[in-house]
Length: 250
Image (tube, rainbow, N blue to C red):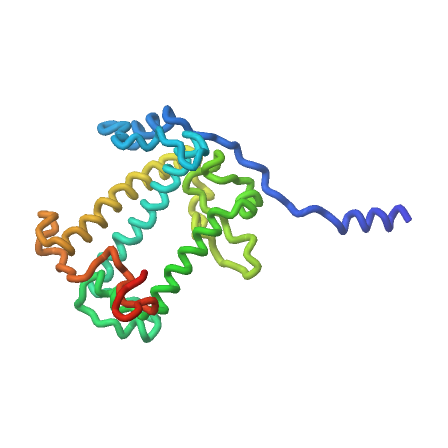
């Protein structure tokens, strides 16, 4: 009987939960220190006093967490967008793409490539981004990995793995090729600084591309390099399934 009870108890076990990471609510002083590490020349610069805000009544430290996450996230998107703009501006195509995408003509500007994409392809991109955003914000997913929300002391820029997804996912977005497993904490810390600086530069670079394409000559270094675009980059869905009688509602 004892053996039977032991076997039964051994068969039942609680799910494994990763140990909780340390919770660190960054302060304005931490931002000032980080700014010096990122760029000793410029240092801390916050002309809009964003770090003094109290967004949604969550407190200044929670607001700083939100700002840190927003900068890292936008920097990553800008880096992808910067490379994507160059790829499409040079009519580079990947083999194996859907026939509808391969049918997009070459020799057009990067924004015109977006305009030429099928509507369903555009909405797939928007939906994918939404799913990734929801996964990043999910407190259950974060808790399973010992993490917490960035406005509650969690790591800014942390993106959880897909271990909780029922369908197998071959890699995670943070370290798909497992190159970070052999890095020391000092190397990781340096890498995070490099990522933020590269993201900031990419945001400036991408907006430089867009500005020159919309207002030729507005970026002297890009004059004659970036082809002009007659459309409106701020209205990516001017003509779409939601357009009614020629009046866009999205």
